[in-house]
Image (cartoon, rainbow, N blue to C red):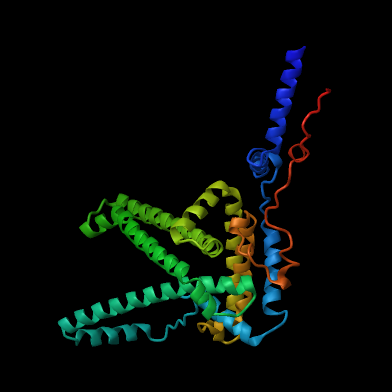
Length: 363
């Protein structure tokens, strides 16, 4: 009997020490509360809800109140963020054959060494222009996000604040583009080698050539879409975590691997939005007599579309947790009604929150 009371007293003391230790129960409680499989805190990823919030956010930024100066500054940031991604080209078919013949005659009169040197200079100039546009676009992505997050029209401040992240994203994008170029060349060998060698397989050659070119185009389009999706998420992750592009790439890759279904739905909805954007851009171009096709002017005219699409991606990414929430550290007061609920609120577990006190024993 004396042994029984001693055992009860030992167990009670151990339980009291465990319950009062800040390094045991609290840590276990936090780990269990953060586990989505035990408490059901797996964030519910939606598509239409962040799009509706993005529409409200766009109205707050651009129309409530309406500020012309702010509109043009944010338009410049949006133009930088989409530099080189499209913008209006003027096509004409008037006497095209005659123009080509005149150009060939003019080129044939140029001495060969001067022609080769001119072509080399032109290629170098085009490459330098592409690199310059890529650098400005990388820096502009962070400026545009900062304008949306903080609801302001600013260029100089975010240009300085996100210099390291913008340069890192630029270098990483150049590396990815170079890798894509090498992969595209290597992948084109199966159909380029027969063409260069002049090999003919009668009718089989035509089927082989068409099938290999179609497969090459499919693989390249798939890679371009995948990189566009990852790059669309990389910039907000770098903005939120102030990390380099290589780390953001790994974070986004793990996110896509963990939520493939939600990301696929987002991509499909984004394709629908892209088609709608093309229709709106065509209507705006026709309604403004091709003024909307002019670079920067067209971005300013279609600025609500650019703000809506960028806000939608930020709000969609926000649903995956605070590490992906660009408003985690600062929410403008005018956005509080839209961004009121946190992206992934943890819920507590009642058995652990209501831990019983240490047992009492009769004397």
